[in-house]
Image 1 (cartoon, helix red, strand yellow):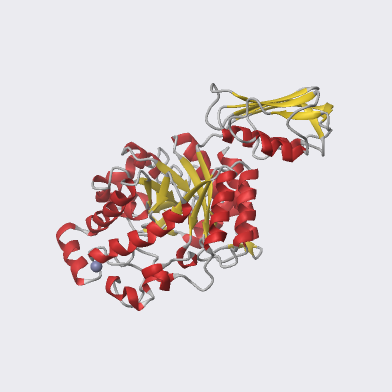
Image 2: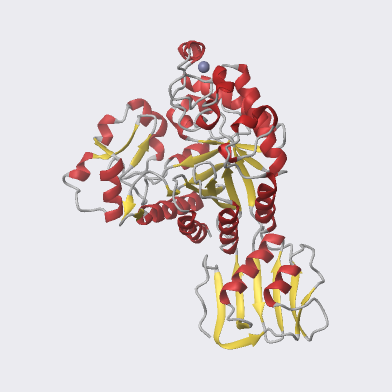
Amino acid sequence: MRIAEIMPQPRQVALSEEETVLVDRSWFVAEQPDPTGVGARFTDAFGIGTGGGSNRIALVRDPSLAEEEYALEIAPDQITVRAARRAGFLHALATIQQVRDGPVLPLGTVRDRPRLPLRGLQLMVEKIYQLDEEAIVSLIRSAARYKLNALLIEFGDRFPFEGEHRVVASPSALTRPQLRRIVNEARDLGLEIIPLVQCMGHLEYLLQYDEYADIREEKQVRAQLCPSNPRSLEVWTGLAEQILDLVGPCERMHIGGDETRQLGTCPRCAERVAEAGKGRLYADHVNRVCEWVAERDISPIVWDDILCAHPETMDHLHEAAQIMYWDYWTTQDPSPLLVARFAGSVCYDERWDGEWAGELPEVTRRTLDRFARPIRMDEDLTEEYLAIYGEYLGGQFPKYVRAFPYLEYYLARGRTVYGAPTCSGNHSSWHTLPDIPRHGENIKTFADRCIEADAAGLITTAWYNRSPDLLHFGIAATAQFTW
Ligand SMILES: [Zn+2]
């Protein structure tokens, strides 16, 4: 039989194209030992029972294997699946589903495990309005089929808030039974749910209501709550509590914290900025949020852009805070493009428009032209920037920098770090479709660097209001490049 290309590609595959086995009704799934509750998934997959046949699918727990590792052996009268934990058995079944031709399987072996511990997709339920229950479940199933293990989910006003915050719930909010089904489906398929609740900026969905006028940082944009107002934390914890109650036990929770462009606008915050700086104002609030999350034995995750723009925050950041590092522009390693947040821009050396022109792949060239600013990298980046970040930029600076240079910077400061590329972010298109070449290279380059740096994982983001069907590309690319 022709062996299908297994995605994500396993570490070791030795499957025969000539010799096969027919899994018919003479087969059964050996119930013992099945300590992980996955036996039913195997019986359902093949339409067979759990006893009485002559040939068996044996699920064997093997504690010597790694967290998500599995070993699959397909012999003429027995299929053996070994794994230490439930995730490994589910991954093995996902592989079997890809190589089977109906009831026929190739003989041979597969030995497999991922290269990054956390691998996932972000779902922006607030912005992507087509994301209804069925679309979300479909994405969850697709993610599980390709062995992803996390879902970062931001509900915004599509969470059915109750009680004092009921005004926030949009008329198109998902219902509690719908959300329970989504959460249960994800967990059952081995996906960790990481809820995201913005703790400072991007809170238009909340601050547009007069009930929250007192905690707005300013009155025009209405995107950011005032970190100096004690009711801000009270409101945030009220919202977060409702979400955690519904989602159930979580290992990690994302508290947002990106693009807080109005930091220090109100008189009270301005005073704090004058005495201690924007970074400190930011960190003080983020730390109070982290404290609340950490008290619940949940690890708080924060976006990295403000930390990177205000490096002094790193010395004050709550010890439990983990960092999610986002960059949607970098498409190769080494990279001509540098996200110099501290120096205020996405930039590249101007010689790429002159003496070095023509040396870059088309996708990188297009990204420079569309999003980045030409500067003299060795002259225009400030001395202060280079004093902090210079050592992470690699040996080919200023022509190239090491892709995603802040990975090592955050890791050197003892932080747990996740990479965050995008499969739908920063407007550019490819023959009117989303910019799949840029997103693909961005996801691949970030995954390769996270693996190289030994980061904790990678979550691919999706921001724009586009068809959820397009997100399946992000799932496939994330799965393939992080495995
Ligand atoms: Zn304020």
